[in-house]
Amino acid sequence: MSVLSEIVENVRCRVEREKKKNPKTRVEHSGARSLRKSIEDNSSGASVIAELKRASPSAGEIRSEFRVSELAESVANGGAVGVSVLTEPEWFKGRKEFLTEVRDTVDLPVLRKDFIVDEYQLYQSAEMRADAVLLIAEVLGKRLPEFVNKIRNLGMESLVEVRDKEQANLACFAEPDLIGINNRDLKTMEIDISRTEEVLEYLPDEFVSVSESGIRSRQDVERVLEAGADAVLVGTAIMESEDVGSKVRNLAFGGS
Image (tube, rainbow, N blue to C red; front, side, top):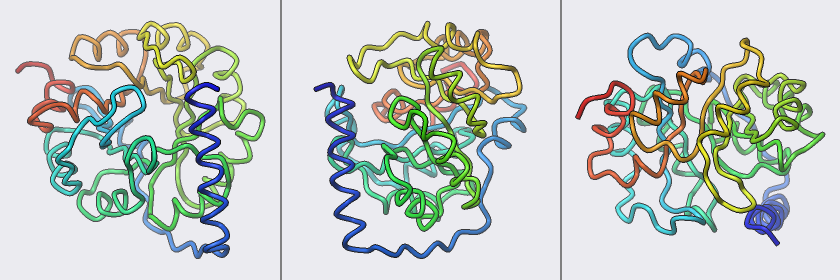
């Protein structure tokens, strides 16, 4: 069983438990902030979505001191156009409360990063006041358009993650607000930034594209932007930095 399959199976079991515990989810979500607009309106430096995550399957624990509000303020001051928050608890040590805390701390749009397998999680996302939700084409397959539409109906945006031509075509058909290109193979966990360059060839210009995973330096940022990406999503390199604000500033504007 691949790491992705194991995570997805674990998430399915967790969601079923949550549905039994709280089968009726009240959705009270208004005033969503647009991640797409934040990227499109950014005229100073590269558009960096800063990801807050404590751990990952490939890296283990990334940041032991995880003061969510402080981190959110620091990446916002560093020039991030949005904040991605891991809410998956087992593999990434995330919590739903992290997202709500970030949303209450900064004025930037906040993306929920998790493994979405059930529409119930979309109602959860709206309850948490997420502005956008990550969907993985490899996980949802032909159900992707259904989830994109549901997210839109709940007043949020969708970022669909792809890693090859077939998934890119599926994402385009679903018409999400943003398309992310994952440079990491979720089955082998190997990273190859050239995947962004390859997959961008299959994406029409009207889609806002985000290069994800493996972005560690300003040079990496410049490489994927020159290939046509509109933004980058960076987690590990920022979370490993002693000064996360300075790291975001370096990725967005260059210099030390």
